[in-house]
Length: 364
Image (cartoon, rainbow, N blue to C red; front, side):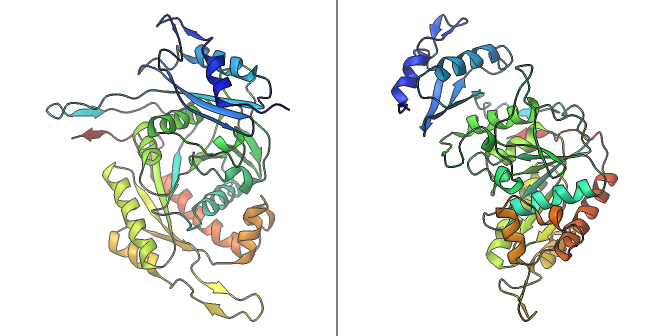
């Protein structure tokens, strides 16, 4: 199989003319972020704000011509638009954004820093909510480090029967979507913020989610573009913060919690992950990272403590194997911990209005 070079991608795209500009998309400066990894290609098409729907045919044409390059195995193209910042003397406001049709509530699972087990928590929380009788979807919002495909044991690419909306992937009673389904697992996504925001918008609104009681969104760590996109553009019912017990992790967790407060998104509470270690041989308990810090932080910040999850080999092994422990051992002790957290989140959703609007954010 021939090796695909970036120059071949640019050459193919020179043959695509944007009818509005009357020029090819390359000379018009519309192409950005071209990445070629093991013959898998991804890039972004920059368009004017508000033209995303009109430019969808252009996006498909770009994908088609690149897909025709000898050796190309897959092509992922997204539309991206960057709005100029408002003048300082004239603050602008972002009004309510449209909800996702058929989705009753959207819950974000977030963390202030990486490595605290946020994605593991999001997956097991989603499975536990499904076991409580809810129809649940899971959206992997981490464009740079998608892990949901591996954690759910799903391979392959989503299909689009009508050429407009993707059908979500399915496993363990969930429907899900991730950029990881569309690019190889080891492909780096070298994208700027607007491209990330555009990809999130497409995975939110160009996926046939069907009727869901709750869509769980696994956010990347930190307080960057993905978090702000979700807070500004969809009506989040609330957020779950995941942290480990040590002070440095809790410091970052507080930043994440304060970010949601600033954008008027309710924080359902904090989960303390890796709370303690139970030796599988002697049953002895060790508090490797300390213990109880998340509970104390929740009390200080006036939010609920949702529960503590132990550090255990079985949770790690089942996550790596794509078989969440809540799914394969539903009556096990670890599954009971996640289910208790899910019950608290379900109760929170019941207390929230199902018609909650997206937050109104004033930019100053």
